[in-house]
Length: 130
Image 1 (cartoon, rainbow, N blue to C red):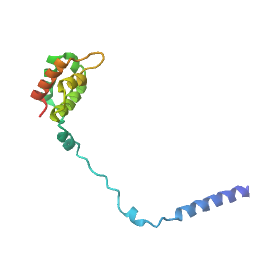
Image 2: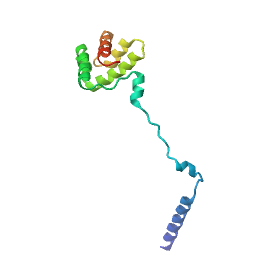
Image 3: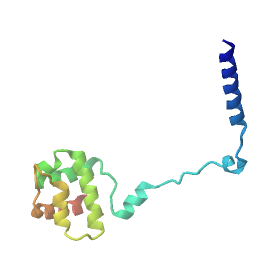
Image 4: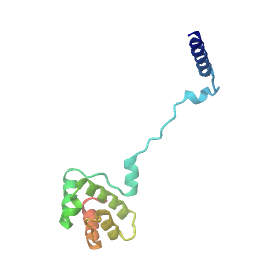
């Protein structure tokens, strides 16, 4: 039994010795590590992504998209997200915006034509995109 006490005492002494060690670099501990703040709304605005529409503006956007193809607004939150991202594409003058609108709003189960992509872009310019 005394052997166990000796082992425990040595282990405790070793732990105390380790906690007493110091790197000597007290200056690093004095100042907190600052986290840079990021203004996502500013970044999105610069990228041409408008704020998420609410109220009448949201209703007008959903109605305009539904008039083109009701399937593309089956999930309204996804349609709003797609619309905001497509505004970025339109803002940046991307090539083939109608094609990419069709790709963004369509899927394997419900493909969207490039002609409807053109209509989507026209609706976005009227309702959401700056």
